Image (tube, rainbow, N blue to C red):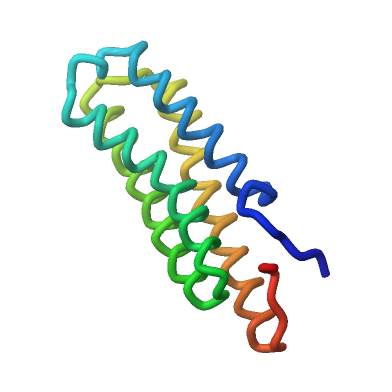
Length: 130
C-alpha cells in the first residue's frame, strides 16, 4: 500500500486545485464577473474542495482526514448547486453548466469513494497517511 507524505501527492487534491483555478478564471469571463456575491461564493466553494483535502491531511490522523473529506465533498455539492442556480437564472450557458456541474458531481463521487476506501483501511488498522 502506498503511503503519502504530503497532500500535494494526492491526485484528488491536484485535480481539485485545477478545478478551483478553472472556476476562478471562468468567473471573470461571463456575466457573473459583476455579480460579486455569487462570484465570491462560487470561488469559495470551488477552492474549499482542495483546501479541506489539504487541511485534513495535515492533521496526520485518518479519522480527522475523513471528516475534512466530508467537508470537501459538501463543498463540491455546493459548487454544483451554485452552477445549477446560475444556469437556471440564465447567467451561464448550457455548455458551461454541463462542464462545471459535471466536474463538481464527479468530485462528490470521487471523494465519497476515497472516504469509503479510507474507512476500510482504518478498520484494518492501516493508514494511507505517512
